Image (tube, rainbow, N blue to C red; front, side, top):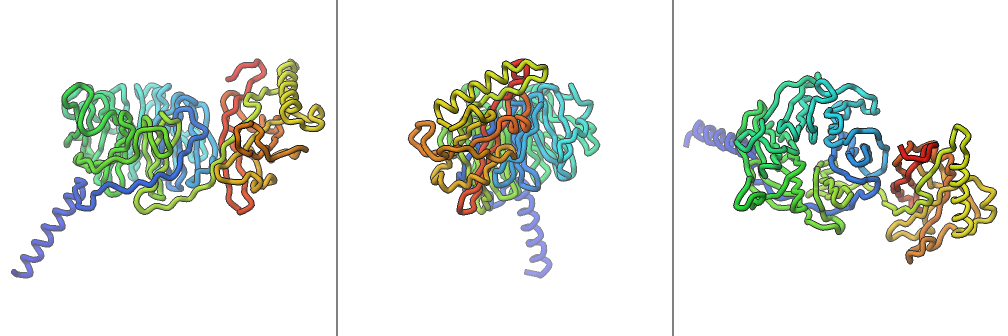
Length: 453
């Protein structure tokens, strides 16, 4: 064999491997090993969509609360942005700008990394019928799934519409309530066509290439997967599908060959109910929004790193806090103070309770941790340090058979950190061995008229 023939064979082999890799057919396309790590189960009512950024932060959209919560890669609560109109899809571009699909306004809102409003995609309000999911590519293109319009709309770096993919129907290239989009490293665009029970694949220009899945036998059933919500493509070209009907994450090749399932249906740790969205962070952890379980599941994929802090369980009393009425109607404040005083005296026996300002009680329990190892001087809630009061601070105060650490916080100082209506109390602290812990609890702030905004 001549040297030229060897070179031709090598070229042909490398070309074939590159082609197969682009299709997701390379030999290394295998099911990743998924290790259940933990759940983020505090601070949600309906965690539906997820996004991560280059710093490893996790953004969670909760349309029932109208809020986006942000955690760092260790799970620490960094803050919440309230006031969205049914937030669904969320993404962060390479510069750190945050894009939020607001289904209630039919728009995609854009914010700076510090949450300063920075405009909208297209015309803003009414640009979409139901913006549901989105992805931003490294070159700045923004792909938005408009579920009710049965389209995927593509916007350029200047926020202008550059192309639309799909029409209504069941033919190739048509959609029936699309729900998710993923752009693979190859440039191919994968769309979960939920109503047609299939995944459709397009090239970078929006030309239909192929589909997999679809209806078989009885209407609404197929042998591949159920009603796919979100989906994503990893660096190896594998496609992850959030199968909301079966309660699993299906992993397939780019041509639809099933590699296997991650997770299982149920409510136990590591299990899923109604998985809706997926993200892979810089630590190679898979995050799955499971609104059926009101939590986000965290799995390590193959070789991964796992920065994390301990999670505590909190019991807050009272959970409804009333602001002082600025117009002088002090009865709401007085009744709240009286109620707080009554349960402090009857249940807790704090000496001199009637002489103290209103306090918020928080019972802290960390599974597997002796509460006496909690350093009381490190406790803060929304940045407010715990208040020193006389009396026992370790005991089974809620009579559930477990010991808790009891901390107190000045209610007026706490109110200064909270918005009206639903809000989060974010508590953090440290143990004697140096480990940190954190947790969230819901509270409701009542405005001077006595109704939650």
